[in-house]
Image 1 (cartoon, rainbow, N blue to C red):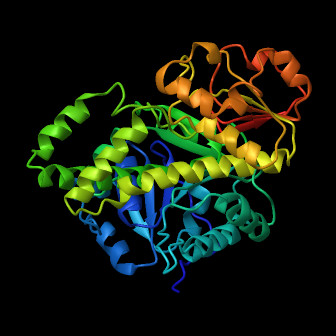
Image 2: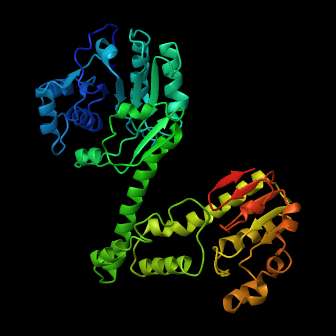
Image 3: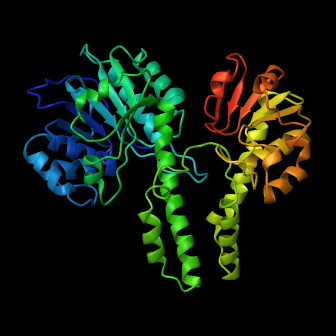
Length: 445
């Protein structure tokens, strides 16, 4: 693999406009970032191992096709705020920040190839050991990487080759990019969020203020959280496209205009296009979601359509319940005892229809647990209709296991499983008692 040349040396800083920033990698992300930073008044040097990219930027030409980018880049070069090279080291003492934007292409097995990133990291670290400047250089990684890359690979490589850990002559941050091709400049100027992964809160010093003018929420989080966000975002975008197309196929098969359906669906910003139902927690249940999803799948089958995204939802829901049971077994092996707080499918109702918590209780009993259940929403003597029938079917839980006195049930438990959010419950639990909160997928002790 070709290597980026980073050699020892020194170069005078000259007069600085804004911050002095190096950009490693002149692809879509690196070139857009370099042009926008230069436009904003910073002095930028772009670095790449490909001489054609370096030559293009030096002439004021963009190495990638992106609306508006070449105009920005050309203006920055003419103003003397943007240059390009394949040799960063002679300029390193004059920089405040280096942004690493090298590619991490996919491998055959789906994992990302981190070798270009690690090679650049090693060479950058060697040059760090030769810097004469005393105040820290901020290294900002923007390449898409799997969670754990910064902690397990990048930081050790930097410390080993530079001869010291971060926090002295250099600091490290991970800042995922959210730039889409064909709208990259607008996305840079109007980001949905700015995520800063750090060793410790405040270590990146808010990236020296280079994005203070942008109107976006800023999240300062551990490295692994910042690394994960990009994967979550793009996985959800892909899911949305596949979901919309499956709905479109079903609509077309029924002679329904899919765009009219989409217009109505998207008009609902209270539930559909909103944070609703998007926080990790328990499985879905109740009288509507399982029934209507099953009916939608029946429509697809009648039309002879394969809809793997929709068809996979019930399986995913069942697998999530199985995962919860496995976690409970790991936290408190049978027979426990275990206290399950919550039995109806959500807080504020006594509806037991398709309740994942009722199924969880049955599965725990089948696994040999000494189980107690507490749910202030459920009174077996007041259940009617289908819920009354369910109470009869599950009398071993609704009669024999249901505890009205929470404190008595807590005293004998080794683990509390909080199945649905109930006001004031957490304050009534002993601080030393382990709690598996399904509503937040969190464990507290």
